[in-house]
Image (cartoon, rainbow, N blue to C red; front, top):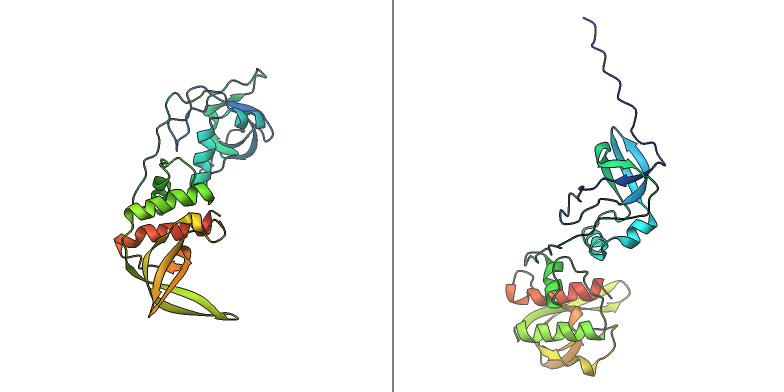
Length: 230
């Protein structure tokens, strides 16, 4: 029995390097409140009827700022997107005119997501970028911890005792120290603690809490934020 011949694929509608625009009415599949009509770019790759379009600088400059924030938050490609051929048209050379969102639907924060909980500390929705560590944000986190923290609590702290060697010891965290007394952003917030019979002060980011204790989750969130956004 002879094999049935496969029909050859139709030639691509757009070649690599072609200038194209997104047709009116097309929206971002990940963010349906973001219309893409009029967005201009060039075809960078062609794959079986799909086209990777890299956005022009003018398009990105005109896009709603929330688009970039969402892409950065979700690790998405900010500079381009894949489309089907029927979603694109050849660039007619007219002045750039892109569709803009009429209503942005903010992504709600999830208490199960650590970065969302951190956004909530600063009154941000799930679309907002987590702010960097500075004097103002440290003060905001300090107020959040004071209002929601549970003191005293048992924890651990690790300290270097030699080259490539550290020692972990038990402590009891007694409370936070006003950040005005330690304005250096390199160390962040400080806490007062008891180690055996001694009272000590140490950076809160060095405190290791039991992540399974819901009362202490907020302190683990602080340490994660301080480590990654300074």
